Amino acid sequence: MTNVKVLLDLQEIMSRSRMVEAEKQKVPLEVADLKSLFEERETKFLAAKLEFEQLQKEKREKEREIEEERDKVERAKSKLMSIKTNKEYYAMLKEIEGTKRANAAREEELLSILARYEEVEKRLAELSADVGEVGARYRERMVDIEARMAKFDKDISRLQARKAEVAASLDKGLARRFEMIFDRRGGIAIVAARNQSCMGCHMNISPQLFNLLQREDRIHSCPNCNRIIYYEGDQAQQAGG
Image (cartoon, rainbow, N blue to C red; front, top):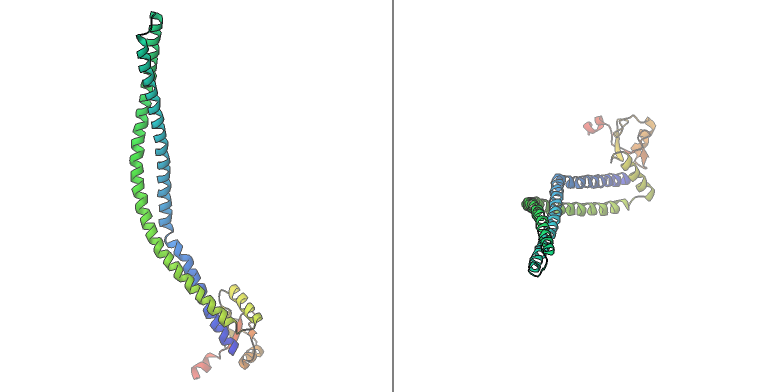
């Protein structure tokens, strides 16, 4: 009966460990929706930030082009007074007007860039505030999640140590066999036999085996489900006792 008591204790410890592990696995799911929302908002923010940086680059480039062409016009104007022939004079005027027209087109392009720049800048500020708010909520929840996960890990470690301590008093072959049955039979490796029935699969066992169980001098298994079984007496005896 000593081994039966040890196996029952071991089953209780392993069942508790399995339950704690299952609870631990559920914890990240509690924050999954918030995490998904945060990642979605962060993706939008990063996309807007990239667009804004690209517009900044285009804005600087266009402003540089316009400034260079303005300088070019001013240099051309300063040369007009030194030109000696009408042909050269009108050619220079034509070049100046062409540069001005090209610059006018660049200025229109700059206005278009500035309009997009302001719109994206405003959207970026809104997204930044949004991702900051959702991120703060997510980080706050994660602090709680991490604390709970740490507690689960501590409990699991304690149960594993207790399991090793209890299993050490068993024959190694029996301990391995018990764990295999536990894994294959839904966490129930040892059950009572009562009224000539296995309480695990509820199938009848032979009178001969039932009589052997009552001796309580060795470990027996149910021939139907292979769980370890032990004698617990019948309900009539328990009621009479």
